[in-house]
Amino acid sequence: MKNTVLVAVGLAASAAAQQTAYGQCGGQGWTGPTNCVSGYTCVSSNDFYSQCVPGAAATTSTKTSSTKTTKTATTKTTTTKTSSTKSSTTKTSKTSSSKTAQPPTTLSTITTTTPSPTSTAPPPPNSFSLEGYARNNPTGTVSGGTGGSTTTVSSYAAFTSAVKSNNPKVVYVSGIITLTSKVKIGSNTSVLGLGSNSGVTGKGLSLSSVDNVVIRNMKISEVKGDDLITLSKSTRVWIDHNELFSGGLTNGPDYYDGQIDITHASDYITVSWNYFHDHWKSSLVGNSDANRAEDFGHLHITYHHNYWRNMGTRGPAGRFGHQHVYNNLYEDYRYQAIHSRSDNQVLVEGNVFRGDTPEALSTYGLVIPQDSPNTCTCGDQELDGYANLGAANDWGSSSINITRVGSFTAAEYSYNLTPLGSVQAVVSAGAGVGKIGI
Image (cartoon, rainbow, N blue to C red; front, side):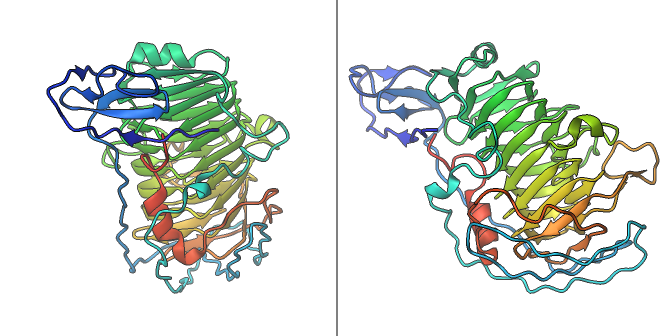
């Protein structure tokens, strides 16, 4: 899809007329005011159209990650993996030694050398291009609303109306819109936030029985008792460069629900370059261990270059599907990051774990009590999942517990793997809103 470029028009203030909020303020053939009223900035969507939006011009900020080096893990068996770091785009993962599916009783500590980041700059824009299952699948690369109508919205009513049809359309969101109910997104839609402070709050987005959807550059927050984004029976979705967060972990796992939950045989999804933070449960794949008949053979999802900070569980947690998890940064993932259960297959490579993150990866089928809800205070028991390790991961001080080695040893597509020593700097600088030209 074609990205527009965010440009602050930046004309000197004068005594000339000023455009009102959300009014046109520039572009080819425009002869009206090019300055905005106080508190608004003229932002160009393309060569033909500009609009006065709240705030100052967007800037790119670089996040920095604190690193903790001391952590004692308990009650988990640790599998130590060594695999060479690869720089080519075609990956072949190594095979780990097999573990039994019994509850672990001993602990060995993983000792790793923490690589120093080799770059503090964000990656070049071409590395933000679509990769993974949303690009490579039997149906075709996701295109969203490319070629369709274009609308800019700034209210709940306008947003709900703009996204509901299945006709090709690009919907630009200007500013933060408070939703009073969950909004269903139609097929063949691109939902794109303008600048670095546009999105929705209060309620989330629903993708139900739809195909070919793009959600980019959106801030989505504070959805109590429900998911920020829910996918059900949906295919070919790209969720990229968003920021998803809530009020933190203080109120427990069920005060909020998931950030991105992918259920009911949804397929061919890429979740990339998102900044997930201050939330308990992040991303669940497969809603129930009783849903094998519907889910098995589906749920092909790529998670890459996401930044998770101050989280609880599910980064991601998968059942019955295939997840390729590479080049993500995990910082202070308080309970359990990647969990593969109920015969799920996960390929994990080139990820970095930092801070208070006790368990980076587990295939043991116990759904821990912190991954609520549970029917037992000791957690719920499911079948174990499977995991394979490709390019080397930096586990930091975290433990891993691989009980079953799977058959998902290599992705079916080519992709750009960031060198392990650069992942922390590249992902913390490049993930989230305001980093792409919208």
